Length: 126
Image 1 (cartoon, helix red, strand yellow):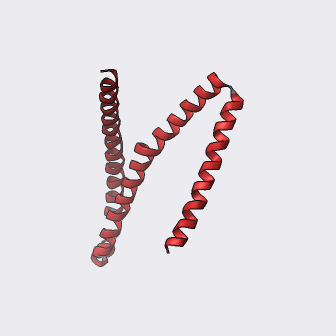
Image 2 (spheres, rainbow, N blue to C red):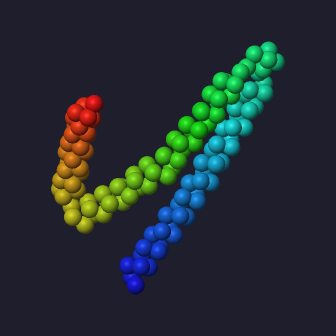
Image 3 (tube, helix red, strand yellow):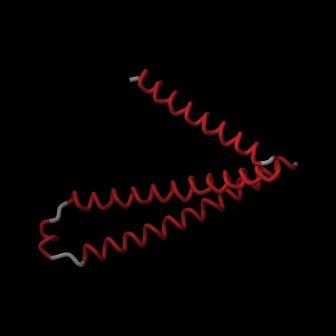
């Protein structure tokens, strides 16, 4: 029952976090869209006569890229940084700074090995 309750709580908290992420991203996109609209609205009339679909397409692509960047930063990268900081603090506090340095060193070695192996594998696949 404890496992089921913890799984349910984990899912509920994750959904709550994603709800907040969506609100933050929508707010950012709305502000950026309003700023772009105001900027384009202030341009000369000649610009609007000569503008094409590619410029509108470029603006839409830029807004989509900003949306993806915000989702990545707020929904993925920030929680990882916070969790890594909390785990590092706990390891440093309960196990000592020497053990924390060992863990961080091994994570660094693992990351470097994984990057090199991935590059080698990609070259082999090509």
